[in-house]
Length: 87
Image 1 (tube, rainbow, N blue to C red):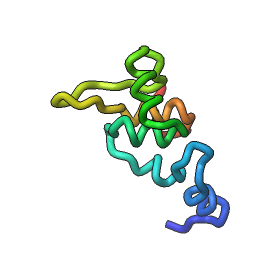
Image 2: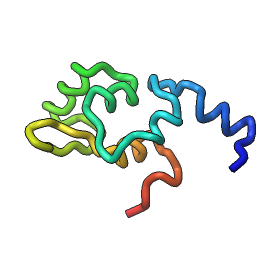
Image 3: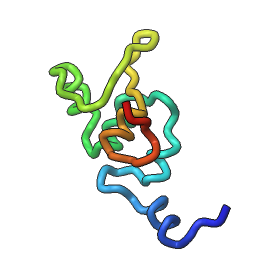
Image 4: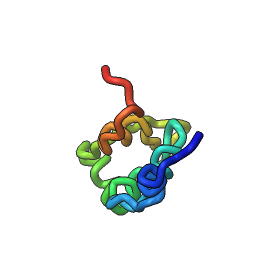
């Protein structure tokens, strides 16, 4: 598969949120809160406060006593077309 120059730049350029688009695209199905906060451009403490206050914009679940963030909800918030199926 051949990648054009514009697509290569898009994949490697840092987003304003602190992760490259390629990094965000390659995330597993769930991620930890620290990684989600980094993708959103916020600190982990702010993310945990937002979760506590029920103001965090991403969907979270509890897995074995740990809070996990659904990557699909991150893609939806970041508006990554083609990565989230419409409901």
